Length: 306
Image 1 (cartoon, rainbow, N blue to C red):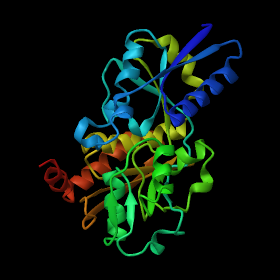
Image 2: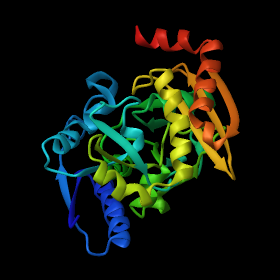
Image 3: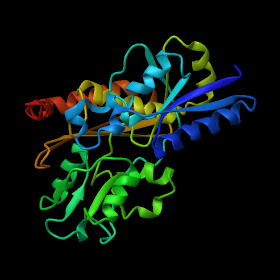
């Protein structure tokens, strides 16, 4: 194979992640020509409404997947947390890169941490997972909807529309903006989204040649963590409109998984955790999801759906 085309969204972060995969490929295969196919997704265009109201995470990948189907691209690079828990059978997620910083960050120009925010301060997020956990810690705060790429969200903060905003550490670090991080939340304060900080590569299920080419890039530790986390999301039917968090960590050959389901006001949070062998990642994810359901997660999720 002499060349490969990578489909990616046009945002700075998406292109940065695609360039990262390009570099990994060219390090492995120096003679390989790699081209980026930059596409605009519906999720990038519809910025004035929450994802949960316009179709969820799939809006970020539809055009990119179509490029694969049309043979306009050979692979697609995504933030794994943008991928729905279940993807179309035409596509495979066989490769993940080594995970970046998985935690959430508070970004503020005036206050050094969440505790310092004054009563009623305005905090920007479009994530119900983040909203519920912030309100659990600080029920007095005002959560205000915010969407757009990292730069546009930071611009709104700098324009004093918010007292603070919450972003993923990974995106800020990849764009060399880690100096904007005011506070990194612990997992006890804010449990991350499933697969947060993970770059994944999507291919056509039928394209075994490409799968073999990508094999050396796959990070086994991250892959196991991602399987455990996404198994929880799948079993709980997670979407943009569900405050669900799942975070796994592999140490040696052991995998530890934490997950939670919350009401959007943060008044009720159900938690579960399990550990086991790295080879049982899917089983551990299934056990955690089952435990959450047994504790009453279904009732919370059913209430959100109405």
